[in-house]
Length: 334
Length: 210
Image (cartoon, rainbow over all chains, first blue to last red; front, side, top):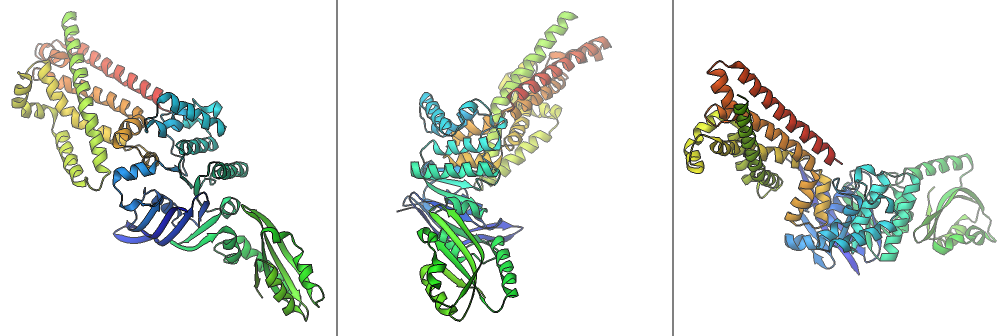
């Protein structure tokens, strides 16, 4: 079941009398209990899309359906109530400066008329869970960036929302804090079953936590599907992964030094990643295989392997035919 | 003369604080209204009308405003001289001023905090009372001290047309009877009042700033 569906979404801004489309023809479906990543370079429209999901940004046209309700066509009062079921963690955290940590966390409950004692109790419990116990009476200005973020997460989770939206949750964090926050996001998702939408420009974040990715380029969605499919398909496009393009150039140079062999990229996904595929496929054939580059990355749902090999010999064609049947994806590059 | 000075000082303080209180009670909601209208596309024309009225009221010199208000003052206060009539005049002049100051203070609320409150589903009333005003409170305290110090000056001006207080004392005894020491004492007391208000305002605002 989909918690969120976006259809034909279009958003434009007026700038100096000129109307420019920031998002166009966006179609998106987020399954109940999944983690969706919205990725792309800066200026691609990621944050605008996220803001449209709870209508902080009003679209020109298109539908945003949350829990079966088209929120673009409901009354302001109904929208206000629906928003209570969507937690938002902003890039700049946006805590209330005049309130202590515990009051910040309890705020969503206090506007719902939850008795003060109960609200503070629940706030304390969730603060404990996020390691904020010793900071309850501090003001936001006295907290570090990481602590402010955890307060902001606690504040978003306290109402037990159906879905949480995160805007660039790791952009201001060091690698250690990044790992911690990603683990926290996975836990919140798997333990509480909360559906998560993350905006990020960091493809590493997508690999580590996202089930699916929606990739935006200049306001249009060029990919929406499982994370491993994105990385097996778009490996080569330099705009998506600078690092991969550099590797390929290097591999080509190495290969040029030899004779006219082929350059092949193999993608392994899931359990097959552990199998001795090259050995199996080359058995009995007259081929030489030269491994140029290889890597196994840990994705959310298993290992994702990439291998660049040079292939030579008179049985090359048969070898490649066998290979293409045993790997997740094969691409002959040269 | 000391008893005269004491009486005038108390009269001035009475006018300053009562008109100050009234101006805050009326001006603050006016500021919230200005802030709300300026942020809404639907209320843009309402905002423009309010904006212009506030500017007009603020650009009329106070002494002229007192003259223009004479018929209204007589109706409201029953008289056009004395502290109570002055309080009415002072409040009329100070409400648009404080409304504008409040609007400016509310505009310091970061856009992101506004967004996060909206994303939580606050009602308008909750937004105003639990987010907007508390988050900008130090600014309002500073504004209140600016307002009161302005009222110190305005009260003295009102003294020239029979409001009573230190302004009238300075003019009647000092200027018309050449008792310059009375002028000097009046001025010293006015300066002390202003300083005290400013110190208190700065202190409170600092204490509340997080």
